Length: 220
Image 1 (cartoon, helix red, strand yellow):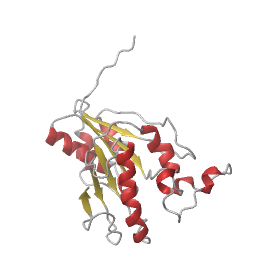
Image 2 (cartoon, one colour):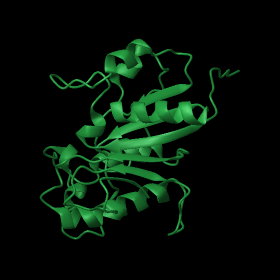
Image 3 (cartoon, rainbow, N blue to C red):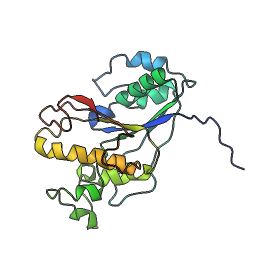
Image 4 (spheres, helix red, strand yellow):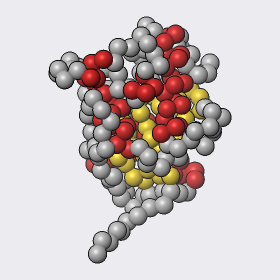
């Protein structure tokens, strides 16, 4: 007999982005997060928030499994979770009064099907058995290792916090970002071109890119 306990019924958000999303509540070395000590000290396991960070992994092909674990709202779990994802979850939980979970998959990008539409990217390395140099910076690898195993996990929406690495290529980024959002929604089961059942909240500190809207933060 299998017994499941401590089950919460609420909503789950998939949170991704670059280093801005990756920064944990306890901060990076010499880069503290304002108010983090108070948040960590006051964290209680009884609070209906669950935290999950997918371990960074790359692969040539979509994987079915990844290294990840749901954690309770303890000081240790809060300290190591993305600060952006955590404060987002805490705010939602307090306003909606329902359990909220966040899955953090930093810097995971797009699948091969989507990237094939951008001819400036050479994807032939995915078919080459040779070792891939710096695979985390190559198309599809992080998606295959970190996002693909989560499909078709039911999520309420997506949270994206862009970094600055795309500033040199604003035109390209303007095309990539909508394709990324469309891909996420399709993988979550939303096939309509006008689908809004999976909102995507974006923070983009690269104003020259103007990916989907004119504001640095928006919901689409």
